[in-house]
Length: 196
Image (tube, rainbow, N blue to C red; front, side, top):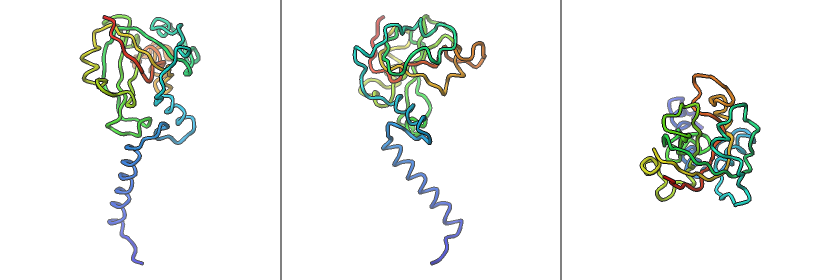
């Protein structure tokens, strides 16, 4: 059997990896791409498709409660639903991530909310619309046009984004790089209502 030269083998390996990625990206499991059980479990929380039921909502969770200073890693539970009202500051696609199998066509939409226009980044709370809920008019452009500058209510599942904890004011107070108040989010958002 003839041996393949590196000149032939390298393109074949690259082609195989690209094809494998395409297959996984198109058929991305709820656990995303993860090497550990913990990472898969976190991805599954982000990719939930069930709607929170009335008994799931924690009425103590408000925008003001999330903005309370102090290390908040254990303040809430990811098994609970939440309703938050706030001023929408910005709406933008997130980057491709392991949760969505690095598929550039399956990206979360970040919505930044605060208690008022002009709030510092360290006073922003993030809520995220996942690809599973991006149906109909829940696209980045439509949500930007409908929500930015408006007071809105968001419902969904509570999630602590450990990957951004060190960039939050509550976990790392005073860091100039902080771009959010807390790593707690509504992720995924399951309902949006424009209040005013």
